[in-house]
Image: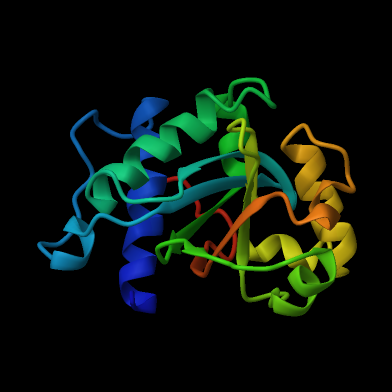
Length: 194
């Protein structure tokens, strides 16, 4: 799908994008090599973490633009437009770690009721999207299983994220899709370069 080397290049690209936003790098566009992978239309999420805690996360479940463009746009959006957090400041950059999740296309998961849904989910493998017929919905990336390893709790929290009662998954009335992700993460924030 995408190699560790390509993922490392995307992380550096995201880091350079943030540096440029804060004037720590010339405003010219950071460059990626001429690789067809970076032109593929893929779903992608960019997460910013500070001291291990989420500081911003924005992405798209389906590819609507080339991967390189999506990483650039979602990096800036995670820093400045995630409504759950104040805008990122330059002072936070040294403590910031970037993660990029490149997604497979979501697939419909057929199920009859909550018990069958529990049986079909693959903890630590699947990202999950839930949607109500009225359009309300939410997703958890596969890495959320590390924080919520119990499938029932995972689904309850996902329903709450969508603005639904925690038990909404039990009825069988939700549309459910699953996807997988390849996650790339900076080991630690790199030292600033001029």
